[in-house]
Image (cartoon, rainbow, N blue to C red):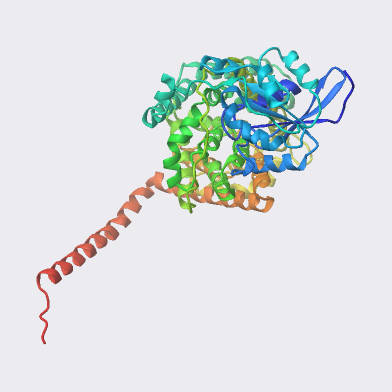
Length: 593
């Protein structure tokens, strides 16, 4: 092979065609794959190598036409137009080739291009027939099948002739599959059964994750006992009190208190990955569009909202697949109230202080967050966009893809814990363990106490006149996992009442997300808007926590008493109006001429 460098291959085609999978194959990368919109939200670029040859490979969001509708499609069309000299690899499923061909013909005019077909087995099972040689001869362009070994496909792509296509011919050697629905597709195309299945699966995943003695709780207990008993037991023999405090308080209690929740976070991610890989999400979006349209959103919003349970920053990035800027911004304003995986350690730390079984408490907090998010959407409602989306084929999730996706999420969590969160914990331990002259001291005499002492008034209205609570809460603006670590660093748990715990959880549920989410909002909106939104959400969350504590500590009784005379006056006023109207109907005035 001749040595060629700097040539760019652009992967383009309809959504769900397998572009990201081909991108990973060519570049040995780990880009997220899935069969729903919003997986690829921008141009992903990476170098591909084969022997001495190099290619720059770009993965673009899927498009249906050059008259793009969504934000991600507009970005993809603009990128294609700006890179006229790049080689186009048009990726299409075998079964949707007839529908995708008109778009390919428009893109290929006067450009170097080739066609790559994917998902052959599914196509042939449905009765489709495709002769690659006949198809290639009739179209007049290189046609490749994505089936076969990774090395063979990579070699074929690198050996493609780099020439322009003068004019594409007619489609030949191709017979589409039979248009028929499977039993599973008929079942999930029914809105009642689809939504019921989703709710049952959601409850089952929460039960397996949080119920005592089951898989999530069992693995959590193993990790927790390893840190708090085994490793802490060895650390008790350290002769130096400073070093002992560093190991036990700075490392084991803080990092261990977050790492022990890894199995439960992994189980929730597994649930999301199975939904993505199965094609279930697109049907859920279709059936919930009517509900979301009443809130001024669209069924596409369900993808971003469900991704919010995993990571708020990633969910904000998926909003590029929505219909327009107005819808995108509404969803961005709703997403902070969806409980991401980083909030899970905090909720479990708070609920573990009062409940042996935290399942219902955590489920309540998750449901509360969803309710607030939907209320925000209703408050911001202006118009309902049209809903256009292709249903992904239902399929048994690929175990390899699921495991790779789960591995990536777990690795990201561990990397974050070992870098940003660990650095925060160690800095917190230093500041809370030494005076300004760096002599070892109790926490109330430390540098951190003098720095944060003035913050104790923030949570005094919810029964916690303590700067350490304020410091733990504000640390969540960096990463929500920091809150759980700070509580274990200072208290070893949560030392206040259940009312204070619920009010504190309400604040953490509704305040601004982490810096990663704020940065993602800045990229999709603007830096000024992201900062203003973060401030508004944090202040409103603080006020809401005050209101929740007031209601939980007897304020509900006072509110009810105050509302009784108001309701009575309204009823009396309504009755008076009805009596007057009846008199007017039965005793009309005489008219004198």
